[in-house]
Image 1: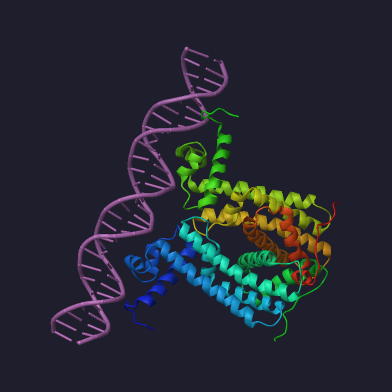
Image 2: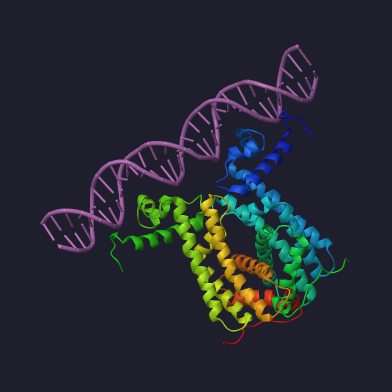
Length: 215
Length: 215
DNA sequence: GCGTAATCTTACTCTTCAGTAAGTCTACTT
DNA sequence: AAGTAGACTTACTGAAGAGTAAGATTACGC
């Protein structure tokens, strides 16, 4: 790999490394308890560099949010779109991608969804925006299902309701996943599909859902 | 009402008022951004009183968690137990009570479930404990349903999985509720029951769930 | 009305950090 | 090899806020 000596790096590369470090520290400590010096140290750099490149602690946080929420939304959207031709298949693919993302990028998820509702306008606005964009992707998928299902009487508001329930359930299940290591994203999704898609009522009477065949 | 002049109050009464104030400020700002002076002012008192009665900022936070998590767990449990004889009826009653609680005690809910994973051992331990006790109540209800349903192959771990998904979905829906004011707890629960109990697959094909008749 | 215990306050201390001033160092260009 | 732009540092300032020392006030029993 690279030299043991601290190499000078071009700005855009160093910036990404700083954001990586910030994501880690923010996720571990939360926004307020996070200390910029610690982020700088983890990035292998001194504090003024952080301020030179990202402007402020707030700017640093916003940069984390922007980058990671975009990644997550893209991951989910791409997986769902490529996942198949029925709502069921797309839901399966999207949720599996979601659990895989959260398992792999735990820091990003914690920063996006487990921040206290404190801090400045700028930050809460940015967080709200990020969450809304993820919710919108999920709601889009659900809305598509409603349209294709041809069920009248259900509208955008219902899609949004369902999206909230889905995202919340998936979020909370990431905690369950922590306490039951070794669960694959697929197994998590199977469990959730049994609840949400098939319904508890039917699961209790013996029905079992299994992943749809490949397209 | 009471006198306009600041009356001296007995310790146990004042303590509860301080916890009320703390809950409000913690929920608005999060643990770290919350300032003890603000809590004291809101409680109509000066800062040293807070330290005299609750020991430290941490002690104050722990007191909030303890009181409110116990309230919530009791509310849910009582409602579910009194709600009827079938799992479906108990789930309906418990969830409705939950949404009513969250709508009425928004502060408590925010403090219990939207805190960043920062701060000391003492606090994260207390929060984890509180969340686990709520989850345990829900998981108990689900487990009861599994047992009564007589479905073999489903165990405690599945009940816990389902409890996480349920609590997470309900949690996330409290945000939806904020953006759609005027929704009653009953309407929220109907929506959630349609997803979770009946299943999206069946809802998309036209099925509609309505609350069970009174026992 | 007098003592005293509990309630409550003013006015600090001391630490922790966000942010910055004033540079130094190194790689690359010419 | 000399100049320079961009990468990087040391060593500060200033504010905010947790926690406290020392004492002032009021209720209440007697």
